[in-house]
Structures are given as structure tokens and as C-alpha cells.
Image (tube, rainbow, N blue to C red; front, side, top):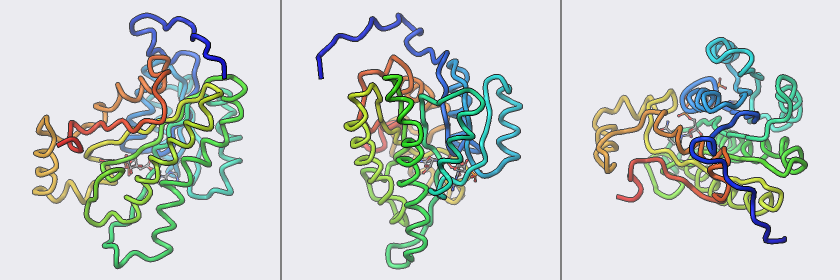
Length: 262
Ligand SMILES: NC(=O)c1ccc[n+]([C@@H]2O[C@H](COP(=O)([O-])OP(=O)(O)OC[C@H]3O[C@@H](n4cnc5c(N)ncnc54)[C@H](OP(=O)(O)O)[C@@H]3O)[C@@H](O)[C@H]2O)c1
């Protein structure tokens, strides 16, 4: 590949401007995905949101505006249904050139108790879907010579936490998957990275938040002494999705106030 200098980077905050881009955000009906859809719209993108709960997605479109946001109802764990999901996702604003894979589930069980069906249910949503969703949109990104993939890792991408066998296997796998996507797709202008969040109160973490001692311990282990709010990740997200992040690829960006560095 020729070592050609890129065009000049837009100056200042213009480098973070997502005007003209279309993002697909999975898992946008709650928690981190919901927050990320709003952040991308705030940065200028139009967003197609995918999840299973239609009432939530409808409310999001109302909130963000139908000129900026649309939705598709989809179970991303149903891998055979992803081509139909992608066809529906292209309709409102054209081909997404940003894919943010946020949909996530878990089965909280000790390693000795996890069944094959439970393990597979997490693998399909947390590890296979990020690749197979992105695959739907990669050909258009390749044709354009520009694309952004953002996956979601976790503390368990690199550290053990109790009761997370399936989840940790997937989130560790996200590291290898993201690097492989970045390697294969980089020559066509597509970056792939993962944001690895610390602890954020969402539906998924309700059982962790409910354990006040554990929640406080998590906060205490960070350098800032608090758990996260989803807005804490917006800067990292917009950077990775924009021209500002154009030379960042194959990386795990921990947004955890130092939890994993402590
Ligand atoms: N919260 C944290 O502290 C934290 C930390 C590290 C990593 N994460 C990761 O962040 C991601 C988002 O989690 P969250 O904390 O925001 O939890 P959440 O509020 O429970 O959100 C999960 C989202 O995923 C969607 N989803 C789940 N299964 C799906 C499926 N089969 N098909 C389509 N959508 C599906 C849900 O929507 P529907 O139910 O409507 O389909 C929901 O929108 C996950 O990958 C999670 O592992 C979270």
C-alpha cells in the first residue's frame, strides 16, 4: 500500500464533526447504546438504532427527531436475520458508514454452572453479532474508502470478575476480533476499535448496583473515586467515529477512570 499523506485534518472541533455520516447503533433502546445514539446525533450524524423493544426505539426517535434518527427492530443474536436488518437500516438515510456494536446480554453464573445453551446465547449477541452486523455494512464502507467500527469491551477484556465466564470470554474475544477487523479492513480506510467501559449504572448492571458494597468498591478502585455515567464515554466515542480518530485503529480504549490501571 502506498504511504500517501492524508488530507489536512479539519481544524479544532471540526475534526470531531459527524455531519454527513450515518451511524448504526445496536442496543440503542437503553443504557450505553441509548446514550451513544444521542451523542452521535449531537455530533452531527444521523443515526439508525437497532434493538428488540420497539416502544423504546420509537420514544428515542421522538426525542432525537425523525430527521436525525430512525430505528429497526432486530434481534442481533439472530444471525440469519442480519441481512434483513441491514436492508431496513439502509432505508432511512442510506448506508451507515459508522457501526457501533453496543447490544449486550449476560448470564451471571459461576464457571461450573454455565450450560452450553447459556454460553452460546451470550456468544451470539456479544461476540458474533459485532462481526456479522459490521460485515453487512463493510462493502459500502470499502467502496467509499471510509468507515468506523466501534465495539464494546469491558473490564473483563483484560481482568477477571466473578460470575462472568461467558461474558468475559466474549469481551476478551472482542479484543482479538477488533484487531482482526482493523487489520483486514484498514487498507480500505476503515478503522475498528473497542471502548472498554468501567462500571456504569444500566439495566445490565442492576444486580451490581444493588450490591451497594460492591458498587462502592468498584468506585474506590478508580483513580477518580466514582463509577461512570454514560456521558463519560461520549468524548471517546465521537473521537473514534470522526476524523479526529482517523489514525487510531485496533485499540482497546478503557474508559474506566483508571480501574484497570490501578
Ligand atoms: N453498564 C456497564 O457498566 C458496562 C460495562 C462494560 C461493558 N458494558 C457493555 O455495554 C453494552 C451495553 O450494555 P448496557 O450496560 O448499556 O446494558 P443495557 O442497558 O441492558 O443495554 C443492553 C442493550 O442491548 C440490547 N440487546 C440485548 N440483547 C439484544 C439482542 N439479542 N438483539 C438486539 N439488541 C439486544 C438491549 O435492547 P433490547 O432488550 O430492546 O433488545 C439494550 O438496548 C454491552 O455490550 C455491555 O456488555 C456495559
